[in-house]
Length: 103
Image (cartoon, rainbow, N blue to C red; front, side):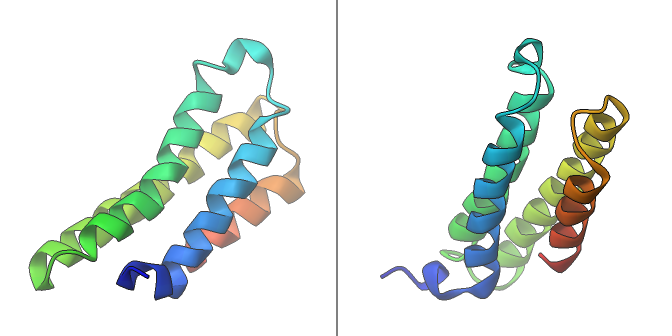
């Protein structure tokens, strides 16, 4: 087992990606290469940066964690847009928002 797989934040981020994929399945088809793709890519970036950063030490690891955090912020911005477009319910948006706060 790789050391990052034991990190709670990594496990939470994998669950987050799964929830994003489920939620975006109901986005309009014309958003497939727009918000759907962007949100999925931003969410996937979170565990990928945690995994890559775990192979580094100190300052470099912190940098990758910072990139992951930035991807969380991107997810919040994208879901804010999606909510305004009525692609997400208030409950779905709040769940994503709260998860990003805890990551």
